[in-house]
Amino acid sequence: MSASADPVRNVAALIDLLDARIGTPFGWRGKRDCGHFADAAIEAQSGISIIGELRWNSRRQALAVIAAEGSLEAAMDRRLRRVPPALAQRGDIAGVPDPALGIRLMVVEGATLVGPGSTGLERQSRSVMTIAWDTMSAGRPDE
Image (cartoon, rainbow, N blue to C red):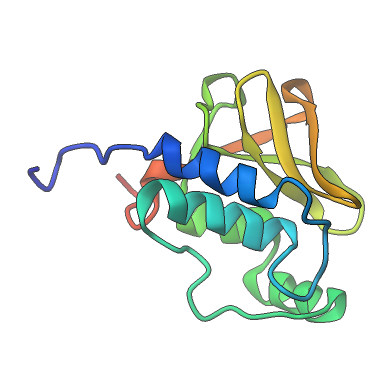
């Protein structure tokens, strides 16, 4: 593959991740929050983690990381290329409104979005998505 070739999205790995986490409830500890979930989905599909050295184990720590990044939206914009929500593909990352964080991250499944919820993975209509990022731009957001 040449350097300019588009990477291949590993949809099977994404499906395996969703299957493995179906009953895993949201939690700040144990990487069960929306940021770690989105990162796991990106890594499953592309082989690249976008979180890097960022770490948190509580709501307070997560809010401090988000503040240091400028916002969750700004952090995502530095790591992935934004795409119009209408063009987001299966496996891309969606931003949905969240009163505490500004946005919450979910993964596009098709007509639905999926992300951590109180009793396991929860799904919402794609229509709630206000922002989207191309998962396959991980490691090359400016291209």
